Image (tube, rainbow, N blue to C red):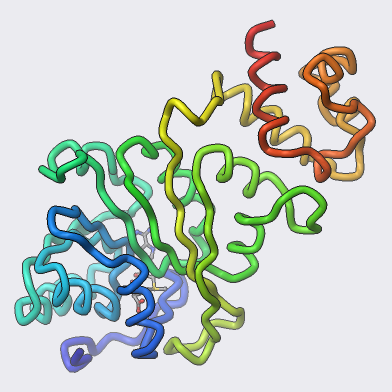
Length: 269
Ligand code: SAM
C-alpha cells in the first residue's frame, strides 16, 4: 500500500494511530476472512491500512470516515484496489440498520471492521449494540484494557458494566494483542483485536433493555456495595432473592444471566 496519497499529519483528537505492521494487518484481514456476498463496512479507514488489503480480497467495501482531509486521498488510492463507497460522517450518526437494509447482502446484515478511535470505543460499541440485529459480526481493534473489560467474567477485577452489557447481547472473543510499535504514531497503550457476534434475538433473553441497563448501571455504580444497597432504588432484597441471587453479594460476583433474570423479573413486576 502506498502512503504517497496521504500528506496530512495524524490528528490526535481523532484518535489517529495508523497501522503499519504488515503481519498485524494480515491477521486482521484473516480474522475478517470475507466471503462472497458479505457486505463489509469499515469504521475509520484512515490511510487505508486495512481498507486496501480488504478491497484486494473482497473487491468492494463501505467506509465511514470523519476526517475530511482523508476522504480524497483515500478515494484516489482505492481506485487501484476495488470499489470503495465512502460515507463522510461521524460514525455515531450512521444508521447501520439502514445500510444493512439497502445492502443486498444475503442475510440482510453487515459485517463491521475497524481499528477504532480509542477515545470513542465505548460509544461506538453501544451504538453498534443499538443496531445489533443488522450486524452479522464485528472485528475491532481497541485498547487492550477495554478488550479485557469486554470479555471479563465474575470474579475478575475488570468485570463490570461494559462486559455485562456486551456479553448479554454478543459473544465476545478476544483474538490477539497488538503492541504500540505496530502504529504510527504509537499509542501509549497496548491494543487488542476482538470479535463480537451479536446473539440471535431469540437467545438474548433481555425482555426490557431499559430495565436491564438500569439494573447493570446501578449494580456497578458503587462496586463495593451489596446488591441490596446498590439496587435500593429499583427493588428490595426479596425481589433479588426471588430470582435466586444473594442480596448481600456484590455486582462483581453476579453472572450475566443472573442480571438478565433479575431485570426481566423487575420489568414484569
Ligand atoms: N484504520 C486506520 C488504520 O488502521 O491505520 C486508521 C485507524 S485510527 C486508530 C482511527 C480512524 O477513525 C481515523 O482514521 C479517524 O480519522 C477515524 N475517526 C475518528 N473519529 C471518527 C468518527 N467519529 N467517525 C468516523 N471516523 C472517525
